[in-house]
Image: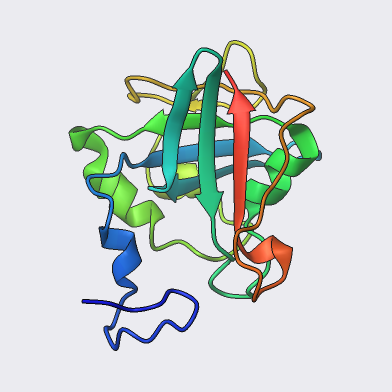
Length: 163
């Protein structure tokens, strides 16, 4: 199958680009706003890019309901911190539940029955039961990057951070 991503002319229900690189690790990003509000969101577009220096990246689309930037992106831009919490098989139902929550202001962690634990080097909490939480902070040289010129820069972003 051939299609051009800019034209999105594949004719399928879902964009097949999402299935080109699998398996992808899936987990939650926990962030905290400048006002101290915790946000938890599921992410499968995440990866460790390098171990020396250690770089962690996640990529986010827009918020489904209003088309604006997701809370996770706004919070990382404000604070420079996040925790990536790799989900386990035992947490699969909670992961699926958090994937359906789109309303802003909902405490996703409480709604899914997840417990938080304090992090050691960043403010956002980690998810209890996650086996390998990564707690990066954004270095001054890292910035949000858009790879889609046909949309405003806020619609596609990548955040890289140093662990």
